[in-house]
Image 1: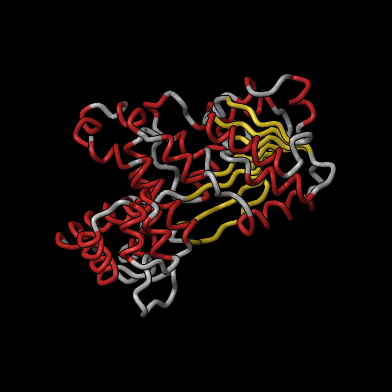
Image 2: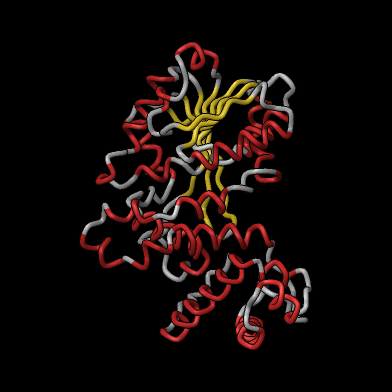
Length: 333
């Protein structure tokens, strides 16, 4: 992570706007995947029914002013295609409509949440949550000898799928408010022959007791909530973090919670370090304009909230990755 005080001037801001619009269009038309696969421009234009002359101009501009997006013959690190799609679907696709109505949100902040394009949000997370990123929490669950969990805000079920594949006797429930995400999770579980041990349900993860019956909740040894709790930090949303935690304690008394999230950075970055936390600050703004709020900036802030709701922080794991300060807490409910 660099500490160089790099900030955008007005021309950089305008250029970024144009480049984002172009890359997102290429992503949605399929032309971006073609370009990254080395398909000639003329063939892409013909297959995608795009104007070849204009396409060539836009691609030439991208090659001159971006790195890692499209091949230019001088690439060093070439951005992973899935990661590129994740960022575009999330920040341009899902949260972009909020930016287009920013004045309305400034006048009535509650309108922000309704403007999110949840279909694009689902696309951002549809293939996420599998593989290397799950290695550490899976190892932790193995050390704790946990075989029955509920994953709140499970998205497309990636963590539960990896959990069940690794443990032949594992049982799990996944809860998410997105019907499209749950459909994708169910399809993936069926394809992997895991649907006899994994159960995915459409429900509000803020009210965990409504998702599982009492007899099912009794079986749960541990609750996981990855990148979910950050949505509960705008008091105007009616979904405060401490209330969610209290409901968790009531639904799963004396169980463990594995909470993974991030530290907010807008207004909390040390002087000269904002460039090293670009994505965290970008996400803070997306959270703010969608009535989710910005989470605490450090362990002390989160710990105080946990203790205020009667929970205990047992162990903390922290690190910085992809310009975000992440953490994973093991919490006693």
